[in-house]
Image 1 (cartoon, rainbow, N blue to C red):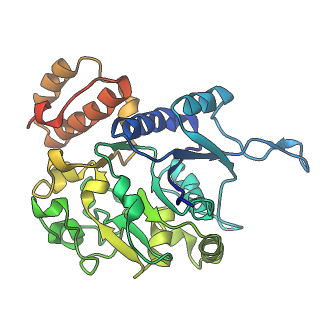
Image 2: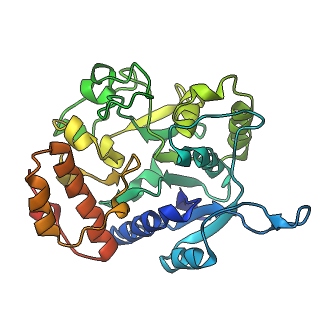
Length: 319
């Protein structure tokens, strides 16, 4: 019997609907051979309370739009800390624990989890065939530079302690990830894994009995880094190209080799539509702000895919 493999993402509120739609369209554009499974809150009625099991701003119309993108829907219940108060850096972080449910999808032999704020630029189906122990995962290093100087971030998140500062530069960086010995901490936006109900059970047990939930600033990411310490395989930044890397790690970044852009932080591309690409680019160039210019370029890729506008990186903006 052929192995079953799938992309999986999580969308809990309507604010991420456009992100999910663009992710699905980008996977189609790169001609993936695998389906995209969308985990979403289960709004069926709980017979014991007569109320929906989960509350969400996602409507039936939203779910229909998701299905029209060719996605498969799977209703789930959120995961939250039990009897423990947790403060979050951003409100949407409170739903990220639910990402753990991806390990429960044992009907699949291999899945790659993708955050819904990603844009697939090249076919990455080969991740489905990565060789690694079943209790491992594969992921790309997180950037721990804190380039926007967020005061709530860990104090040791400075450029000199970041794996990408210490790791390879282009062209080697295209296929050579930093050594995990440099900074053994991964970003949880893209995860290559083998589903296992036992691992899912162990993860929940670890989570529910965690001695200090408030120490986990980046909820699922910190938890997974603790749980999989020494049990993960690093892959290059090109599979999870965090948008700020383009400026804060410019010696490593090459537009032409990016496989997947990750639009981290709260300033998502869909929050500000780009209408006149050329004129708006000229306007942002006048600011002289390199981060703003870079973000406009990356956001323009997102909007072009969302709107169905063909483009090639070689012909796109240069700075």
